[in-house]
Length: 79
Image 1 (spheres, rainbow, N blue to C red):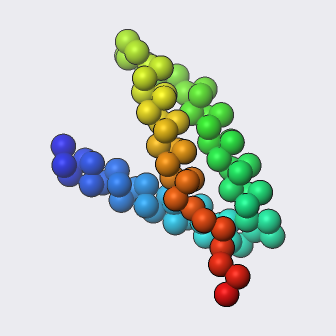
Image 2: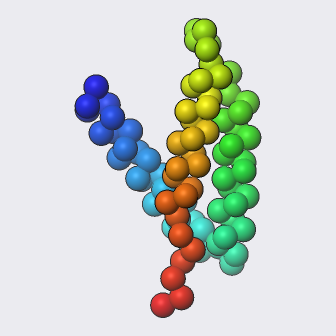
């Protein structure tokens, strides 16, 4: 289980870095991040999870993860 958690953390860091990189190349990075976050939240809300009795709990956890990832991102520095 620790290996799986480690891999998930690594994936989250990679995804966060990729999103931040694309945002930095955008003419309006904050707007890009806001729009992208909203799109990802909409996708998570619409995911159909087969074989789960309580898919709302899984969906809520996914939403929290998305919010955590985006809260880690700061606007690009002016340097």
